[in-house]
Image 1 (cartoon, rainbow, N blue to C red):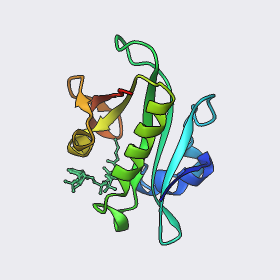
Image 2 (image 1 turned 60 degrees about the vertical axis):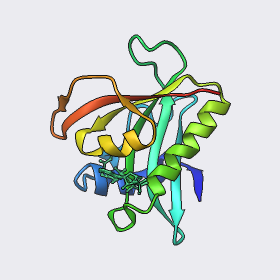
Image 3 (image 1 turned 120 degrees about the vertical axis):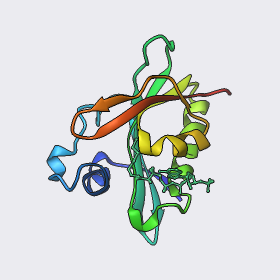
Image 4 (image 1 turned 90 degrees about the horizontal axis):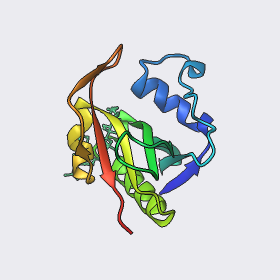
Length: 144
Ligand SMILES: CC(C)(COP(=O)(O)OP(=O)(O)OC[C@H]1O[C@@H](n2cnc3c(N)ncnc32)[C@H](O)[C@@H]1OP(=O)(O)O)[C@@H](O)C(=O)NCCC(=O)NCCS
């Protein structure tokens, strides 16, 4: 099951999966409470096992109506079981219904295949995010 969650509910997995167990207050994104943004959690065994955050932000030269995806993470104990895909598909459906144009993200190079399987395509050269590693920008166009 995928549901809307609060920003605070994303912090444990952001910390453990994405930020090398940094304290929760250092895992807050400045955009966490932005108008129109939302956080999703996939639930299994009564716990949140996969998270992602979406908020309005256009990508250069891709036009208006863009949403940015950040903080995509699945608990390693539940990885490879389809929870991340369910969560992205939920967002695609919700944002398509809301007439958004596209979803984009800075994808870790190690996750590019995951995003490709969900219909995202690479739109940049590879670049380094300091302290995190190599990334590509990826986009999924939404069609009603
Ligand atoms: C990348 C990540 C979010 C995927 O979540 P997940 O819940 O394990 O993914 P799913 O089980 O829904 O996988 C969906 C499909 O993508 C594939 N896949 C998932 N992660 C993959 C990866 N890193 N490389 C290649 N394929 C991957 C799965 O095998 C599955 O393929 P299938 O449909 O052919 O069976 C998760 O592995 C993770 O949190 N990784 C560490 C943090 C990270 O890199 N986050 C992304 C930051 S941009």
